[in-house]
Image 1 (cartoon, rainbow, N blue to C red):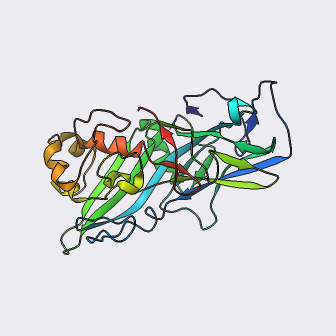
Image 2: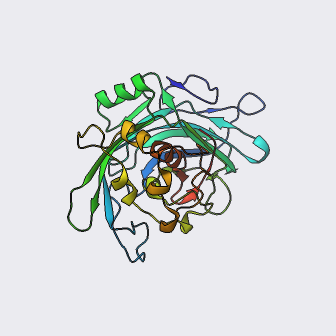
Length: 298
């Protein structure tokens, strides 16, 4: 079960339903939606101060993740003008740092009309019961998500190039996001034929972006800001309370390091580092690789 921004029929895991204007739709189309992690999650984010390497951190740190657990699902798609709408109630909880070699299936849409589904979206919802699909997530982590409304559990560290101590962090965050109007390879959304596959892909580097650009190719990735957050309880791990107490945004994210548009993300006006993290997490949803989706306020 889950708390959702859309209303859907109760379905068995791995199935989907058509909700066209005629009360249902059928056809020869079949679409498998799989879960894919951007390489920055399982492989980490390298350091490259020269800025020449794609998706690298430029300010003397590298990052790695032990767990990158996300609740994702509630796919909603339609052809132009809302025709042949298809919805799924299926929600997965997946550890994107430890996905299996064969990308796991979120949901199959079977026997639906073929063609371009130009309106495509999904959510990172709060769950209030066991997920329909569990991909390498420990039972205790699932229960923590249920008990606390978490949509993310992220554990990792940033490591300075100079060989100093790693900065450990644990992000357990409530970021229920709705992604809509996803771009596609040739046309918006996804194409459905007799045997089709598309991916819902989550990125792992956004908490190191230097802002909220319209085009991700314009960003730099910076991690030094975490070194400016104080570990207030001295437990060796930066957590929510530490990030919330980091309120000097000018020191954390200085314009001299290229930080711009900090208030342009899903949270809006930021008051502390925790707002920055939540806002960046609310922009991570993509499809079919680097194709971006519109995100809403959280």
